[in-house]
Image 1 (cartoon, rainbow, N blue to C red):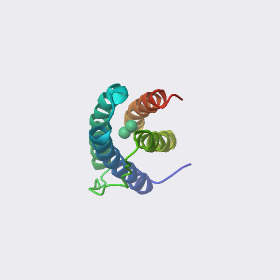
Image 2 (image 1 turned 90 degrees about the horizontal axis):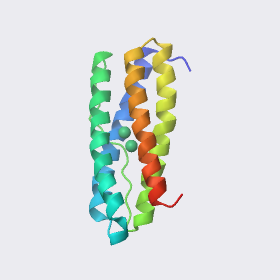
Image 3 (image 1 turned 135 degrees about the vertical axis):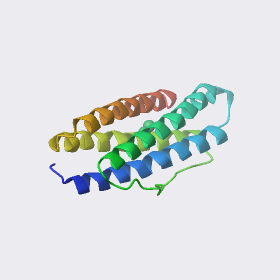
Image 4 (image 1 turned 180 degrees about the vertical axis):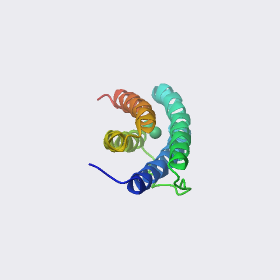
Length: 140
Ligand SMILES: [Fe+2]
Ligand SMILES: [Fe+2]
């Protein structure tokens, strides 16, 4: 689990790429999703998009603090013509983020980067809320 600061910067930059792609994916899904039954979740997806941008800002600042160079690369974006497929794509992204941030918190603490760990915990809590919103919309 122990990593060097250089390795942690590399991993945080991967997280940052995926925050950018999550924001874009949510903007796209909120725009193309249709149907009266999806009105509430469409509003939630727009909120998620803004929260992913907030996460990207936090990660970019933290990478800079660690003397790293924040990436401007964007990760893979998934979309579909089917509402339910889009929600499943979003949920898969959130579940991946939850897995990554749990590991990242432990790695930050091992390096005694406690402020970073605290920021990552805040991000993790939001990703868990996102996953719950999506599960509810999927009837899971
Ligand atoms: Fe996020
Ligand atoms: Fe999220």
